[in-house]
Length: 526
Image (cartoon, one colour):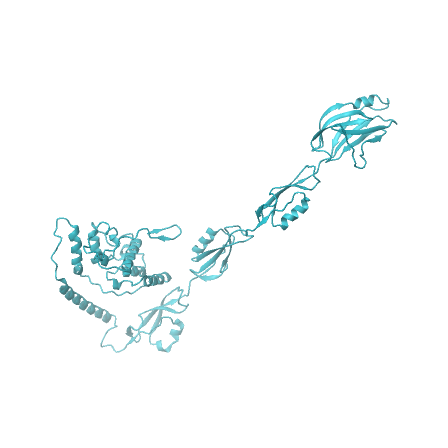
């Protein structure tokens, strides 16, 4: 019998097969594989039923509670004989900490006579549940014990005859039944005399006593009601103890000594045990704790539990949402508490919308209304209009889960490229124009229409190519009156000059009026 980590019990081996109908009834190695656990009737080769299994359960409990088997010997046959003839040592002799009630259950299950055992598994479970509710309980089982081993002689002789080499397999049978009957009658007579003497010593059986009355039945009544009841005034009702009870209301009597109907003196003392009601405990607060911690908290507080999984949009998966009864509620021990554990957010799927081409603010709103999650948003230089979404991390039309994060990239546009040139200070007219890749560039931006005419002067004359007009790297020529003023290689994505190819600005200044100051061209980007 194996106990798994989750508390599940598994029967791994069903033990020996019955051999009640076997004609030879030989005790083979296969048949005695579980000889320490077989019932007396099984050892004798008689028919077995569920009461034989109850005996085996009793042996198993005996071994679990004491650490020892009830019967051990040098051979399997000897163990079988002990199963039939020998009473086991009291479990409390081997383990003094065992409660009496538990010992009572084990010994009743192991009675030699099947009729003195529990008759059904339900009957045994009823006593076990009663013991669990009140560990101080004591079961006063009454048995007729026949200590005479001779009634098993024939069966044992048959077994030993087939297993002991060199000995006669057939032994002379003894007419033991008449002897057994006489011994049994004598034992019964002695027992009756002993019981009579015992009752007489207690004052419970005395033919000469006239003030003996049956003890009243006080169990189930409130102690205060009993004490106030005139019918019980002659008795001394003494509360000897109190205990918790899940079945008897607080203040009511659980048991009494002497028990009801036993004849006692009319002024005798009756000890009673009174119920405190069920032992109470508060449901611990396990909200937002992980499931294992919550389960341990219930066990520490003597509560049972069951787990119910629920979706929750705020509590992390695997953590507790709430309990029923709620935290802080006073309940009886062993009450079952329902622990609601989060499965995380409820999962729904949607089709990914197309965000490319939208303004970045419109795209963010679409993500929110679609119950998606906004991921990383990055602005990058691009020829697309400024603020326009140019990329999304999940392709349009793809099926995704609700709250799936979506990353976006949007256009920052391209920078304007601005040149500054300097021409001599005079009254001459200068026509300035730009070629890109040796083709004329006509700027439509107000103030920077190409070509344009200027009188020159000592200050810088601005020349601009609009951002987005080109992207990538291109050769740019600045022409003054149709002649090359300066040629350079420009990166239009960044608005910077990669290199100066030709610079004729000094020639323009030296060939002009002597009042003109010599200068070189400069370039800046915005």
